[in-house]
Image (cartoon, rainbow, N blue to C red; front, side):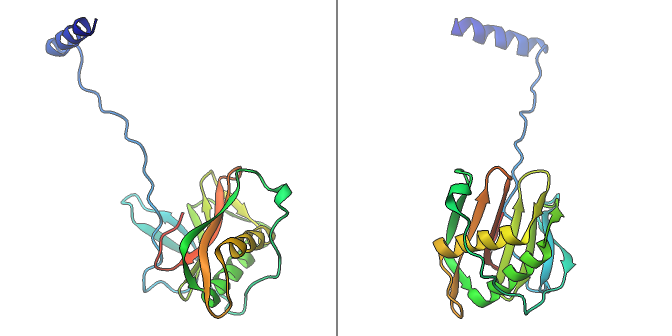
Length: 187
């Protein structure tokens, strides 16, 4: 049977009845690059351009007085079992990322919709971010502080020293929120 199929395929190709069809290309979205050295501290919508480069579109300035909120982690029983906290295995200066987290949470407030690949707050060497893997996300202040609390508990956070880079993944939301170093990629 294999020989008959091969002979038949060769016949069709030789007769011009079958032409080569392009195979569908799978979309590959790369990791978003951190801000360039000349990017001002602020809150941004971050996305990939058609050429694969990362674009940082300014939304709001940074308020250096916004820092950590004492909210703790969510009740584990109320979490979706597919949700998880993940650590990158490196740290970033805690004081910088703390200001970035405070500004991102403040921007989200009682509900801030973003449809780009990410929303990010950049300060010093820290980036706090939200990743959109769906058709848009609405971030909320309390959810972010709970996510950052989960990241603190698993990845570490020491004022005046290092904060473990990481993210909290919300599977059912098609979103994740986290923090990293400005020299690292995310989402």
